[in-house]
Image 1: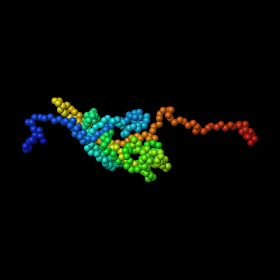
Image 2: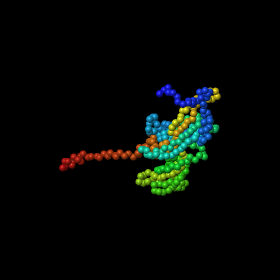
Image 3: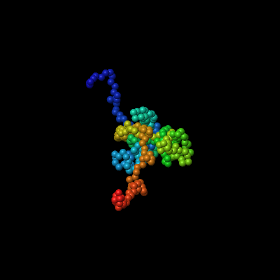
Image 4: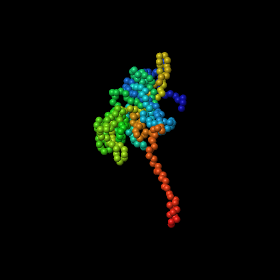
Length: 309
């Protein structure tokens, strides 16, 4: 109900008789506050991959195999910035579709990339799906992972993530262990290359495919931008004798790399057949159509037999 009488002594939140003071944020000091606790990140911007598509709505890539992208995106380095990650968790929860990894971190950013110093370059622009690496070489961001793999003969076996260091020997379905440097080596790309002079899991005669083996290794963790709870934030600040709008920095929610993991490995089973006629499989040299033989028949001999009978 309106027009109610006041009760007790009334105190103004802002003294109505004091001179009015406009408030202004110093965004440069805010950037300095963020970067004082920050570590360096390398930012890779995402763009949808059109490689091999004939139509925007295509689910298949009929013009070629796209093996240079992940999650359907092409990533290019945009720069480095110093940001503060307020928390980082790793958890697993069960759902109707299976086990779901819940791993969110909150990233507090400055407004600009690093150029000659901290936050003195171009303005940062983020989008969901962008990829972030910690770029400080002294930061330990290695994490452990394990899974099963299929032995592929004659090619590098690609794990789920690039291997930095093996934690345990490789063991296959026959409980045979394999030694690094003797039976296999780790390539610069983080793949497993089986050495010709060493042992390998081989082909299972029952299935005709490579035997299964297990690996446990360390890889470099990275993150994807999942959402931007604070994207466009505009505030008025005082610059000299003029007040004008300034854009404040992003706040981002990032997730670990195992939430977004979908990459075409480019193995032998997913290569497309070329459309060029000169590269098609030639027809067999020998025909498989049976020859048609003509059998001569003497009609006079048949007539003679009938007359004799």
